[in-house]
Image (tube, rainbow over all chains, first blue to last red; front, side, top):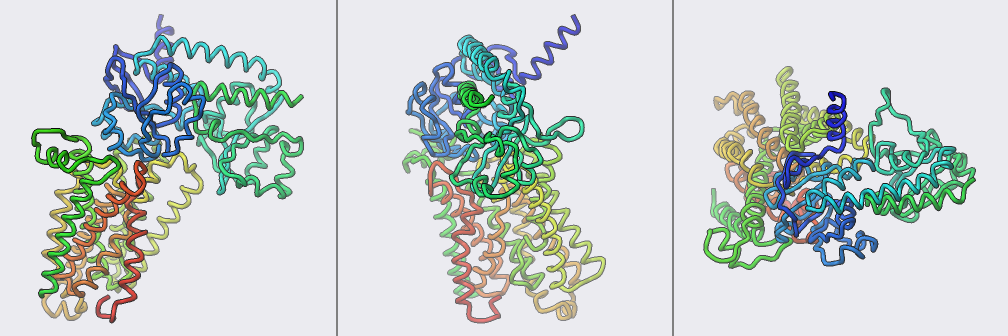
Length: 305
Length: 331
């Protein structure tokens, strides 16, 4: 009995959020009482759109960085295009949020903790770790959001379907993936950031069975989620498969094309360098996003032995 | 204390009031004048309680008190170090605060962001105390004290750069917003935490401004007039440090205000501190209120940091003033 309780407790802590009673949502920064079925929801990270779209709920406000096309058609097909832009994810405009008279705000731990009190003055606010959380945490957050918006049952169904879809992909990709190490990174004009095994994409690659050559510190702890990486450091990691998301073209990685060190990378030698849509892989995070990533991976792996 | 001073002071006060009114009425959301008045004076009719009373009003007031404090701090430090390039930055305050915040987030990644201001104030004061202690240990000339301050500041900046280069930019996004100097998400709690101290310290500085004029005569003459120059210098430096540290702790590194405002004030009313200090304070208030309000309306709903705007708009004006200054006695 005792071990069972402990296991249950551990599960609760891992999910980092459980419902104590209806309307009471516990999250990264405490417990918030939310209305039964919030109608006017403002989301401040893209993964929260993924959650709302999963159960067919449209937010009234999105921190879309004032670039409406950052909300991809896969989402707008479900949530429509009637949302109001509330500014950047980094510093969303609090007065625009207030003007929407929301009844629920979903904020990110890394980005918006400093504004939690202010956001809470505007509307009930829950804070989840989207930016620095891994894939499994993002799926756990789906449950929290489902409860917060009063659609627990629908969300559970969607999460179950998602897990089945992913299991299908794992079955197809896994056997081949076991023979390779793979690494994802995003690159802009200034540099390359590798997504470590504790990041969202890193944990996804791990789930599909890829090895990671990124070395943890002593004790097996990875220090950072996103690691700025030079060409020398990349050649140390030297994965079999390199997957780049380019935010600009030509990117910083493109400038390495003629470097001997770059040409010597295992992935370059074997022609196993792939480009994917940086926005979909790196910024979105969520169930639909993970399924798109899995589809890309399946395509990549179908070309390999 | 001339007609020119009176006119300047009145004009700046009026400009500050106008800028504050604009700051309260302008933002990403359009609100009618009637609604603004209803909300501010709690009249009947449609209101915008959150946007006006809990967002724009405290932000505007915070911009006023911190802008004034940073300008006063800069003016005092320039006078004491007899260096026109001096600002709170020169005694390491900004760099100390920035380094402390980054170290805090590095070693305690889960620290609540509301503790950042406290950490910033501790870092700023620690660095300033270190520099003062050096100056006390072996009395040195103001010019050398400035150099020591610059050296310590550079060391802290190197630490900041090291952390920013080795750590991921993504994970430091929240401290980075703070580092550029911004009033985003500031409200009554931030204002209440600093306004009593800032107003009291500012008033004290204005009262002591005539001592700065005595010190400016030179240590020998001031001592001859019966002043304990060392003690008074220390008190004034302490006041300047506290003003800047408290401001930096709530609005971040709005570095340029402290350097620029005293020069603008000198151009307007000359270098006598009794007159220059209040003018510098009003200039700083005006600059920060304008920068914050502009940052909110320039690309709504995107918020542009006040720190970026004070540099963009202030710097050309600052250069113009320096180029059109007639003589050395104004610096």
